[in-house]
Length: 135
Image (cartoon, rainbow, N blue to C red):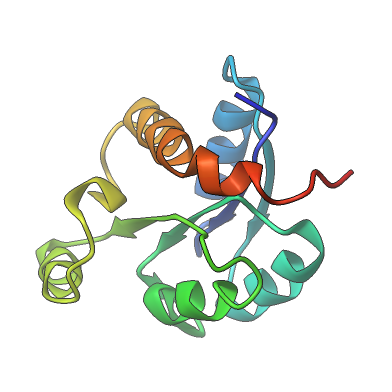
C-alpha cells in the first residue's frame, strides 16, 4: 500500500497526537497531520490533501459530518472514519446512513482505529490510485 496521508481531527490534542504516532509507526507508514477544529482542518486539508479523514463527530467549532462534506470538495472520493463519543452520535450517524465500518466509538482501542483506517484505504485505493502522487 502506498504512503497514504491521513488527517486526524479531534478536540483533544493528546488524543490526536497519539493517533498520528500510531498510524505513522504502522507497517504502512502513513503520513499524518492533525487539527483541533473544523476550521483548522479545512485550512490544513487544502495543502495536505488527505486520502482519509478521521474525525470526531463533535468539534469545538462545528460538526465532523459537515467538515467531511466540505473536504469532499477537495477530494470527492475521500473516505472518512467518524469517532462517536456516545450512543446519540452513533444513532445520528446511522440515521445519516453512514456505514458501520466508517464509524466507531471514540473510546475503542486505537489499534482498532488503525485497522479500520487500513481497511478503508484498501477499499478506496483503486479510486485514490487515479489521483496523481504529491510530494
